[in-house]
Length: 582
Ligand code: SF4
Ligand code: SF4
Ligand code: SF4
Picture (cartoon, rainbow, N blue to C red):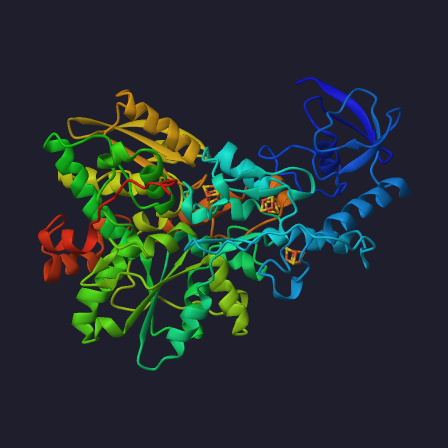
């Protein structure tokens, strides 16, 4: 690779010619402030916080987009640079609803951090503020235009990474704002509710719809039996909210923290994931053996399901009818478990802690009910669960490990890897392979199906005499590519795993948010994913069909995977969504 010699703040260095000044400065350990920049996603040089002086050039250079060149001399910290950055930031803040004390992002806001870093103690430019209505119609996402700094990180995430384009900049000049088609609520446009725009946002302008108050109310009610379940990806990230290194596996501490919050039982959604594998795996075998519609596509990512309902309604028959693991588990808790424990399911309140904001909307779907009762009553994101612990004075980082409660707390390694791209596929292959061949697998790891962030992975897996062709896609741009292949009849697969979020649930829209610099310099997905594979390896049982809780559940209640009872409780339907009809 061609290299160039440059000098930044007196430091001489040789860097690839493809670098921007910002890349080079970061490599030299020089901190240039940024706001709109999100590496490889939003590199537009719009906010002008990253300006620097380049010797011989007129005016300031925008370091996030200016490429380095041979002999370049850069100064990042002159009085003129500092003054210009301060004026720019003060102007931004003058048009910002600065209610930090009551903002969900206080303490983790790039705007607030920058104001502190640049020593802003007063705003000289008070004036008219851009107006904008709070949009809180969606069950998953709240948009607060008064906290928006028009950095467009959300727009780039939605359009470029997710290929959805539900939001964009509308109007011009002072009236510019981030809006939707016809300025409707996010709830009323073809948004997948994946929440990736929330994790891209540097401020509190985008956030999840709060469920903490409803959960506190249920816990405080002595007549309500409150059960919480936690998704696999949560344990690999919740520690970050308490200052633990990214990707620290803290299953036992998470359980201890939830018990301290006062839930009556703390169960593992992984048990539901094992159940999903039994139902989905059986459906796949049935489709393969009986000429059913192929490829069959996973249905456990509600952001993906909503995207399919929005964009590919004619292909919905390809989706497995299996509910997602937390919905299955909720349905089992309010039927089998309630019966066994003698609890009135009407008095049971099931809470799911999820890495996802789309699961909030999923839990409110009419189809996610059994006997008129919702499978899941409230969904907390990982961030909200951490917020509740902080509110209760619980520091998860210093808790002693505790175990999930019996009898529904046992789960396998196959279930824990559900939290990353390729995990559902690998879990399914472990079970489908042994069920179809009747032989024990010599090696449990299916490395060929372990996916990377964004993109499609393909593999052919030999199961007995059958060559099973599979594909794994994460991120909605990759989902689009797969669906377009299916639409044209060019998808040669039997089974496809699709996750709405790039990287799968470990980097879901409800997970802890890190600033743009951390995102650019740390492999957040890789670290969290490694934590889940470590958890899988450490478990005694690593195949869903070997989970004794699941075996007992089929023996005592469901009879067998795909039974009438299973269909009643654990399967669902999908429908085309229509917008812009009024
Ligand atoms: S978005 Fe940031 S700066 Fe604005 S109110 Fe919230 S914490 Fe404060
Ligand atoms: S939730 Fe996802 S689809 Fe909807 S606006 Fe945000 S990024 Fe786009
Ligand atoms: S909503 Fe957030 S990410 Fe989007 S433009 Fe506003 S501040 Fe930036």
